[in-house]
Length: 209
Image 1 (cartoon, one colour):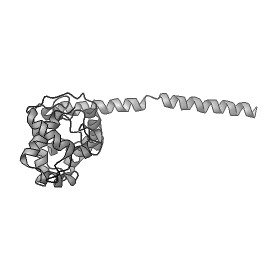
Image 2 (tube, one colour):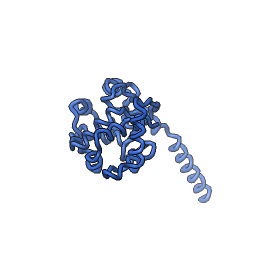
Image 3 (cartoon, one colour):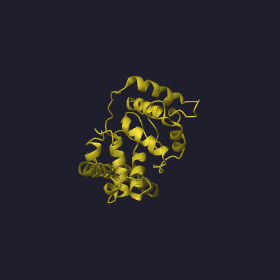
Image 4 (tube, rainbow, N blue to C red):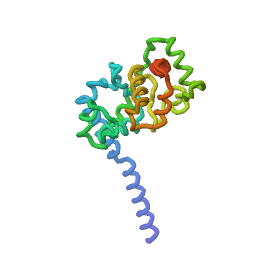
């Protein structure tokens, strides 16, 4: 009798475990988070970044395909003031950490599109610097940290396909120490780049996929 009860109890535990695995709660939570992100994008983000994160203005970054953790951290930095932007700070002041996480996952899930390079010859020069750097001036190869295809990591941003003008503006902001919330190594690298090198690298990055 005792062994029978133990067997039934064990079967009961297995049944409960199976039900827990089939519980729709995690799936529903994820769906709710994506719905919340879509609500925020439709109400705020689309104005500058487009309805799917494919900003049509070179002044604002393309966010489609960007690493979720990176986007989440940037949004938090805007809210705290670690990253300065008179346009972004009012947009994120009323958002929660959960909202930032949901937006990060939503933008990461959006399709990434290939973009035509405006000046292929300039981009050719940028390719050399991006992949090999400039040993004569001490400029490090961008690919060392961001990858040969600009894919980045959860810590470092995905650069592939970014607007050339936006990338150029960010490099100049690093050079002037106007952007201080990210890797301080970028200050040293950007400070060594000439105007031509900055424009060339930005052009090359814009065509990466």
